[in-house]
Image (cartoon, rainbow over all chains, first blue to last red):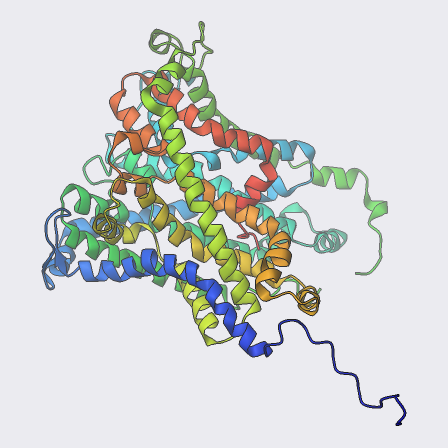
Length: 311
Length: 286
């Protein structure tokens, strides 16, 4: 009888699923199918659909016919398109100029540790909860020249025909958009500021730098990626503004606030020109993609890069 | 970090540095800008029409009344609320479910297919819903789903998936590999690991995306505008708009509808402010 002590290595404990790792890992692909289904059917297919419809002629009710390049020619030759484009970019740029400094400063403000600031922050974020329809309706009432804020505060300046004069309507739109979205970007900046290591500030303070110097030499550079993120969201978001402007001005007076997305909707669902509306939609997508890419390039290294290098 | 302590400097110098007067002023000014409209809306909603026309707009109502709220509720707002709830739940739950499964597969799996799917979802972040509304309208009609609440859910789910997958997969990626390995050694299949390990650990991110998506769907306007028609199927934002169109002269009532439509979210805000705010920025702060 041989010695029962075995010198062969014991077999490793076999897990119940003994399929080779590779096979097991690729089998997980099944899990993505439901999400893929929804996404492909209701997002990707419509995306292709916009392109296809831009070459079609349809009134939204009857049959769909082919229209070749007619829609493209008519839209590209329509001054309305350029009006919409111009307005969209105008609102985009002015909104950025208005919202970013305010959000940045507020973000720094609310990131501070004083207790009253936290209490203020609770109230600052209220606009985020409201639907665009609610905000628009509220401001329409607020700006009534006779029964709104103008009379309430006794400020005749506020009693103008906000919705009837093109420049005023545009200014109003920018203000209300800022009112609605500054809280969102404030939150983002607040998060960004909270991540800046205090050691940087302490070192600067020891070097004798005052609050303003600290802001420009520490806070701003450290917030670079936050600024890019917030700006990307703001810019790409403002491309597709619809709800607020629809309810607030409906594109008016005249066409003075008829931004791109609104123009698309009105062409398609009011004028029943789905083909040209799809052309606008394609333009929207192209501009959106270009902007997003451009802004990411601006950011430089990939997002995972750490700004804490060197510490 | 070198250990020089800043303690000796904690005196008047530090306190003066903290006393940021322009900052403080700016903060209060912004607060006024935020609160004034809210205040106006609330007090006006409690006024009678006579009070609205007679009193100073910023004065508290002399005889506050709830009749506007009664009127709004009688105008089917309860129905709108229920519709909004159905659409929101019917969008958020499937979104989170399918996105969670997909995220798990993307993080734990391997292979070209999964990489392709991941890339596709990432690119999907750039697709704006507004631009695809016309084909969606066409599809919904062809599917015989026009003027239904289901029509609102399907595109909402689709467009919520990219960001949800992004956030959830980032979160799952942070789960230490050892935990997964130990589940495997215990004999669990990947399916079981997903539900028993990954799901509980991912809960904070799931709450975040649920809130983010929920808020977006709840306040959504374009999809209901285009895809529904019957008054009985209106969701709250749409109901607000039609109500305002119908009763445009009765400002107190209109503003009461605004307040009512916001109340549910306000309640949530009071209960779970931190989660709500975290959900709203959904990881954008990173």
